[in-house]
Length: 137
Image (cartoon, rainbow, N blue to C red):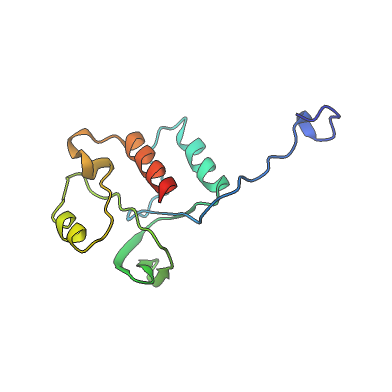
């Protein structure tokens, strides 16, 4: 609070939060990310993500995960996101055929959201699980 009322409304400007890593939120659909969220709350979630520097990209075609990162195509342009972790939230059926081979190869694997319980799809639960997992990775 600005008791000297030097700022409009008596509030100090909001300082951007410190972020430990750069996060990308990608989706295959071309529509605005989070478009299907509640009308009264969706904008709040998107604003919070933007405030924390989350890069949101829509209309992504995933081409592969490589040692250097995630290769994808956006608006016809192929690009490589140089990332060290990839969290995939896709589909509405639990498809776990890759789980055993990945674990056998020594890859650390976490199953969350609809991949964990496809019968109980819950976007808020999946987002919460993804956020908590990303925080500990």
